[in-house]
Image (cartoon, rainbow, N blue to C red; front, side, top):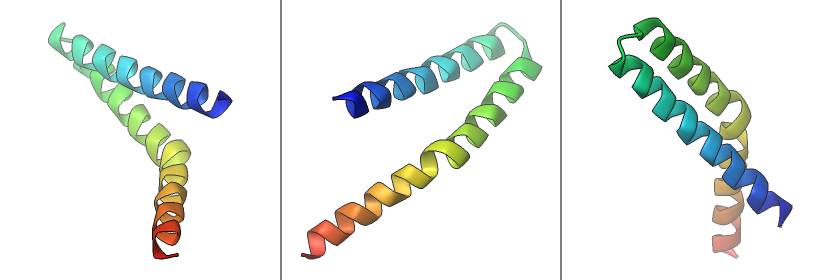
Length: 65
């Protein structure tokens, strides 16, 4: 159960930050938009991407058996 809560919290945080970045761009604050998008990219690739790759490999392995 905790895994689901943790997952949805991070998904919500990712989406909320992306929406805030777009809102900042609409308001004309391009530098804030760029900083937030770059940080979101780093966060995804360094924190979430390894877990996503592991899950894909786990599902492929499970499908083969």
